[in-house]
Amino acid sequence: MLETGKITGRPAAEAAPLVLCVDLDGTLVRSDTLVDSLASGARNWRIWRALLSVFKSRAAFKRKVAELEPVDAASLPYNAALLEYLRAEKGRGRMLVLATAADAKTADAVAAHLGLFDAVVASDGVRNLKGARKADALAERFGERGFAYAGNDRSDLAVWRRSGGAVIVHAGRSLAAKAAKAAPVERHFPHTGSRLRAVLKALRPYQWVKNFLVLVPVATAHALNDASAWISAGWTFAAFCSTASAIYIINDLSDLKADRLHARKRQRPFASGALSVPAGLTMTLILLIAGAFFAARSGAAAWVALYGVSSLSYSLFLKEFPLVDVFVLAGLYTLRVFAGGEATGHLVSLWLLGFSTFFFLSLALVKRVSEMMTMRSAGRVARRGYEAADVPVLQAMGVASAFTAIVILALFVQGEAIPMHYASPELLWLIVPLMLFWLCRIWLSTARGYMHDDPIIYAAKDWVSWLVSIAVFGTLAAAKDFPLGG
Image 1 (cartoon, rainbow, N blue to C red):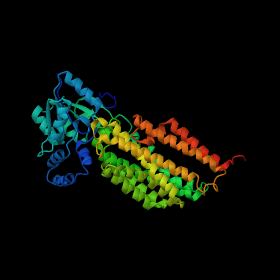
Image 2 (tube, rainbow, N blue to C red):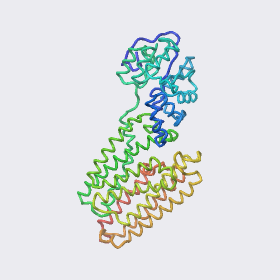
Image 3 (cartoon, one colour):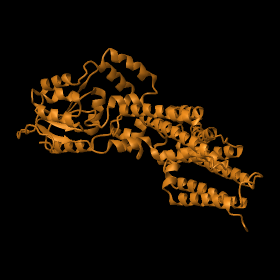
Image 4 (cartoon, helix red, strand yellow):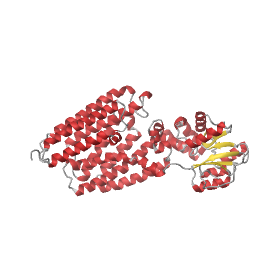
C-alpha cells in the first residue's frame, strides 16, 4: 500500500533491497534538464542549429545540447524529499543507479555532484534510453525484476513492468495506479504545493502596481471626472498587465541558470521546477493574445506594442549592456505614462515627461545597484555588463537623477498654470520635501543593503513609503479643495 493510502499494489519483498534505479528528469530533478538547457541557450544560434540533428537521432540531439549548454548540477532544482530518501537508502548500504534518458554528460555531472550513485545508465549519443529501451538496458544489467525503479512519467511504465519494485514520484493518480499494478510499490512521493499558486506567482501580480502609471495623465490633467478616460485607462492597464506578465515569464525562462544561482530568485516557479518550461510557453501565448485584445480596446495599441518589443529586447539581450539596461528600464516606466495619455486623450506635458525621465532613471539605478551589492562577492552579476567597482558610480548617477527629478517637480509646482486648478496651490510645495525625503531614504536603504532588488516591491512593503504616499495624496486633496484663510 502506498503512503497516501489511495493506491494499492503487491507488497514489496522483505528480502535484501533491490538495486534502486532512479530517473533524472521530473523525478530526481523537478524539471527537464534538456528543456532547461534549450531555454537557457535560446540566445545561442548553435542551439537552434542543433535542432536539425533531432531528425537524425534524438540521442545525438541530446548530446549536442549537453555539449553546447551543459547543466550546472549544483543549481538544479532537486526533489528534496526523494533526495532525503535516497540518502537514507544509501546509508543502509543499498546500491543506487542513476538511470535516465538524459545524455550521459548531464547524468555524469549530476552523479558527480551528489556523490550518491554507484553507476550511471544514460543516453550516449547513439541510443536514447527512454521507455522500453531503458527497461531493456536495466533488465540486461540487473536481470528481470532484479531492480527497483523510481520514475514519474508515463514512459516509465515500460520500466516498472520489468522491475521488482516501484518508487512513484509526482505522478498523477491514474499513472500511479498503473505503476502500482506493474510492480510492488516501495514508496510514493505525491505532488506537493499548489499549481495555481505557482501560476499566480509566475504572473507576478505585485508588479502590476507599476501599470497604474497609465492613470497619471488623467490625474495631472485634472480630469478625474472623465468617465470615458477611466474606461480607456482600464483597458490600457489590463493590456500592460497581460503583456508584462508574458514578458516576465519569457525572462524567467531565459534566465533559468542565473536565477538558480540567486539566493531569492531560485524560488521562482520555473527556476524551482514548480512549473515546466512548456507550461511557461503556453502561459506566454495566452497572455500575449489577451494583451493584444486589451490593447486594441484601449486605443493605445502602438504604445503597448512598443512596450512589449522593448521589454522583450531588454529581457533577451539589452540587460547585458551597461547603462543601456537602466535607460531602457526607465523608458519602460515612461512608456506606461505615454500610453495612458494616448488612451485617455490627456497627453503628457513636458513637465511630466521631464520629471518621469529622471525619477524612473533613479529607480532603475536603485534596482541595478541593489542587485550588484547582493552579488558583489562574485565580482560580476550574471548576464550584466557591470563590475563590482562600478557600484559607487551607479550610486552617484542614481542620486543625481533623484535630485534632478525633484528640481523639475519644484519648478512645476510654482508654474503659472497651477493656481487655476487648485484652491491653495502653495500647499503643493509640501510634496517637494516629501518626495525628496522618500528618494533619499530609498538610496540610503540601498547603500545599507536593505533594498530588495526591485524598489517597487520594497516600497509596497515599507510602512514609511505608505505614510509618504498618504501624505502626498492628502496634500493634493487639501490643495484642491481647501483655500487657505477661506
